[in-house]
Length: 369
Image 1 (spheres, rainbow, N blue to C red):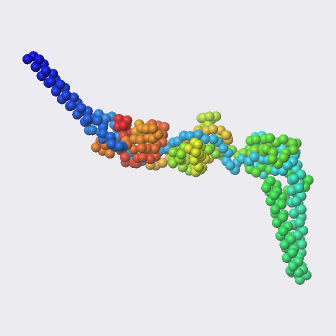
Image 2: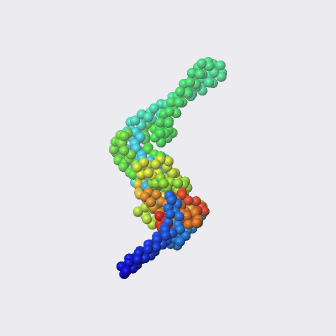
Image 3: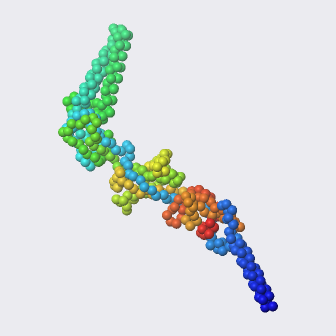
């Protein structure tokens, strides 16, 4: 009898235990999230809801920041490497290293047989032009008085036009070397002049040495009052870089002296190795803080009136992409992939993925994963 009672007692305990377990399982099911694709359903009784903070995003005025690196380059038309235009011997120097020169200032004198031959050709062309011009004017006068024939006049005019063209050609060959035709002389050496105004930044002028036409440049003139900073911008950040945007440039040499510049040109070619684009920033450089060849830190500042700014805590990472959750009401949340740019103040700007008016999970999104 006692054995039967004991068996019945055990059965009762098992039934009660199963009832409690079924009840607990039912309660757990009521708390569990349901995930269908990118949509998350949160039960009204789930403790997850108390850990989630949502906010409505709106476009507002903002300075979008982006930091990268760059190198300092001279403006393309503000640096000139000066070589000897003819083979010859340098007989005099007019400048020294660090000296400022104006456009057209004399740099050095060169004795060159080739130059003297060019002068000779020019002077002969000048003389021929003068003679043919006089003959043409004389024939023209005679023709008007009925003395010279029309054929003689046409021949004189043709000779003059040919001589004028040869003279023009000879004069142009001198101007290529910045030589003034009005100042040439068969007994004076060539004076090489500066094609730009600036400072002598490289000086290797061997007075007395004979130079060949393929010799290295002997002088470099540069105007560094303005320079280019060539920055390297990743392709996924190109959309926030615009012409005329403000830029701050700093160097390791002068970290406490930032230089302000503006975007001059955004490149249209992507480097296949670095996946970046060259952006040219024009900077005033009258204090000569930025020196060609320097590396620099480049901070782009793009001002916008309708930026979508969200807290960094809203953005979650998965492999090679970022996402956040958008609330659709009734405890339903949708996963949205976004592209963002950090602002450096625990906020970031959304470049794509959500729009003004969306309600996002600002905190606690990790509980919805």
